[in-house]
Image (cartoon, rainbow, N blue to C red; front, top):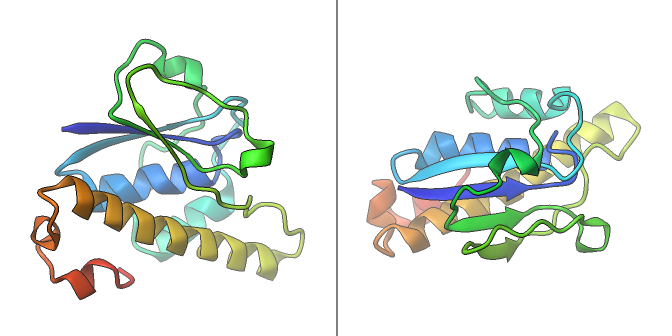
Length: 154
């Protein structure tokens, strides 16, 4: 089973949604984790709401420091922060991947923030489905679906 660590500075939104979604759709092939350089005290409520609205389980999600994973091996470490705002963390031996997503918690207005979270979720969904396909025998059959279904919303 391949181990993936999603990183973001606060580990409260983007990385939490990525961890939950990969566990949900790729748990047969991947172990998913998330962490932050400066983790917040809790997972952002809008991240949890977005996951629930998309039928993704949120059990066990909690903000964690990247130091929690020191010495552990990962095949992929995927950074989700804006590159210019990123607090880089390196995990020796892992392939480092950068998927830059704007912080969905930044919009102050509730509807704009909900839209931002949904947009980030959709972007993560597409990239995670592709990660699964590319890393599981390089075919959409690994998802038990056709290639067109592999990239359609869940």
